[in-house]
Image (cartoon, rainbow, N blue to C red):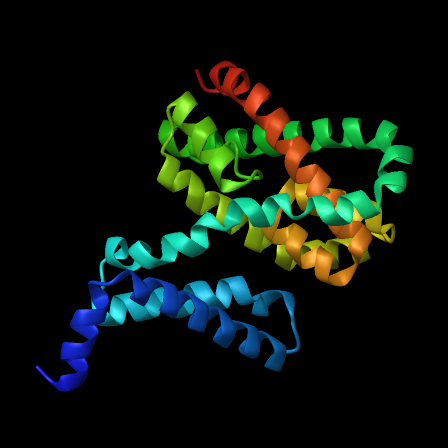
Length: 239
């Protein structure tokens, strides 16, 4: 074994590997995203996933070994979501005035997301487990995994669907707003948080603080509504 290979085998067994590789991969992804003009398809999250996946496959590193260090970054997902309360506080007056429109919008978005994806997946021949794992695709990963486990789906599969949903929302969101002539940042943020959870909200927060505030609010409300209505809805539609 070459000296470099010996070093890699050593690092592979330490938590520092996953942590270091994750941080370096994110910095590289951010640099590539800026070089490509911060286009939706050049989202740093997608780039980082591709880079890290390629590295793990190329080095035959088990995901469990990588996650020993990456779990420290994963832990920060919760505090990062809670931190979205900061722009919400700054936009509290706008949120309070928009309350009569926010609640029905969240309910409509949650129902449309869950019902449409389950019916489409079922009609396309998806297995029961796949259909149930898709149901809470538009909420944050911890809530989606808990809901899917309750209704009999696959939590790991649900986590993948949540990630893909967020990435798709980032890509198609801005063009869709322009096509539908939606210019109000409150509506854009609410749509991003309801349909694309934290990933889409983080994206719109970079574009406009008010959109980030409404996106953060939508993440929380959509999570609560999904946890309440998706289990009985899944039993009714899928059985």
